[in-house]
Length: 174
Image (tube, rainbow, N blue to C red):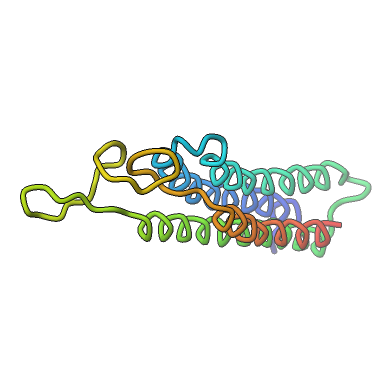
């Protein structure tokens, strides 16, 4: 039979691991997006900030789980029910943030693909490099991706999936 301390510890690890994985997936694509739209200023970094919040959600729950574990003592040990509740708390925020990060990753990738551009040289179609090239496909300069309100709002709604997981985890952890 598994120890309730082990179950709680696994919940903290799951929260940190899965939330960080979702954040990393989303941040990687968001970073590429930011380099392709530098003239948008602060708004080009909005997807990175939104992606980074996902890892914070996992940290919050991991700290709460650790606090619950530290409250237990030999006089008042964690019960199996409490251990499993803390495990499911970590899993709920972790899986929600992982899914949120995957959604943000897919959305930014599709946004970049939809707004990609081509440059004709030597009678061939080529994809332009990450930075530079010719053509005008952005807000303030050549070959840049547009940062629109639709992009920012959609990112907020995708990030809300992780927030819902955090809310559920807070209720479970009690």
